[in-house]
Length: 73
Image (cartoon, rainbow, N blue to C red; front, side, top):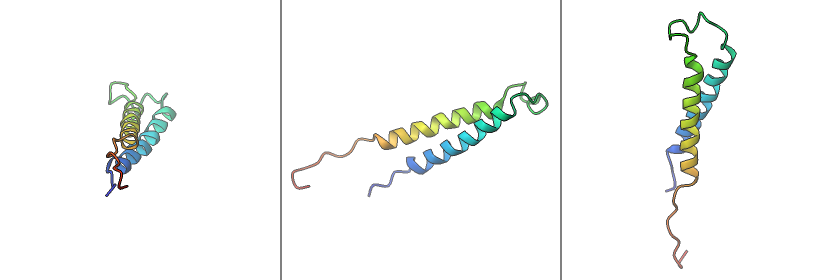
């Protein structure tokens, strides 16, 4: 069976990473919201990290090593 768990997890991480990064970009000038995180835009950095992980999972699922074909196939 060709079910690969990396595809749905990669899609989830990619989608949530994009949404979180967009939220971080739209609130980039709000000092009050990021005062608790030492003025680090934690939404942007977490979103970008999730986006990288999601794209990595999708890329490894796409380029996984397929079994060698035999003459009977």
